[in-house]
Length: 369
Image 1 (tube, rainbow, N blue to C red):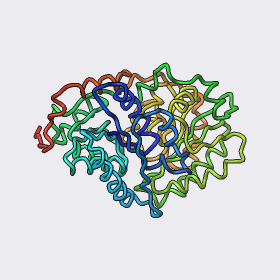
Image 2: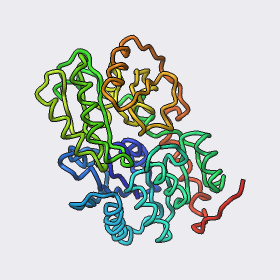
Image 3: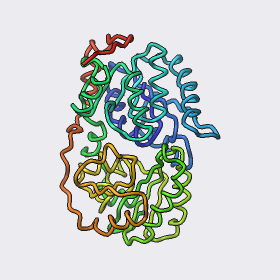
Image 4: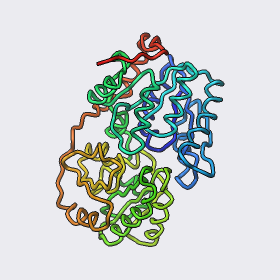
């Protein structure tokens, strides 16, 4: 059973679900929750439904008070009932979202194997606490690279439970299934010849400052001269300030603003963008593979944004404008980063076809270095 709560994590696990759907040894279930079911963020459950998966289950996990602890509690409640209904052999979760933590808690407390995709990485902010917590609640780890594997072993995980498969979204980034640029532009009615991508997410540990940060970001975009494809933030605490600030741009001809984009269409638009600006992980993971210049704002990717070609700036308008003034002359080369070579789904399947993985002890043991 796979759990997905955001457009971002679905992009990471889509190829993994697909390869199990087409294999006779497996029956895949998909538990859909979180942002996918929120109209203001594009109701991206429609994208999942288009994939034609056999077993989809939706659950609304957001309350009127959308604090992360209440979202966690409600997700646990809904997921627990579904797990007892379908009785999966394994729950697969991704990354560092609060829904991910719910999946790991439900699995580990119901004696179900939990497999964590992309554990052992550095996220920054509260996301890092969640990612490492999920790793300690998980029995199996499908990691992006040797560095992540090393971190998990440093955290006491057994070497035999860690499988290096790369980052699954690389499978899609370089597949033949991406639409061409004209198709993507036509689909979203983007008339720009050239454009940049803007994605700015809230930082939960800096929630009290997010309104100020959002306004400073929008002020810089308004004073700039580039054209932009702007994508709504995730639904973390503080997102309402960013969405509110974007209202200032809605009648400006230099901007096309979207609650969400289909993952393959987003990748095509990113691949052909002049640059990406904001604090999305797409600027740290996907953009370097495409050789796209990156302006990274603030602290959200603090421990990840160490690539020499990334322009790291503060939250203030002048710092952002300074980076924008030089970005057109900023040359980068496509990065052969160590996140795999596009065969993550195949390696994932190979691992699950090995009988030993299904006999990993549910009673975890700490391994000293």
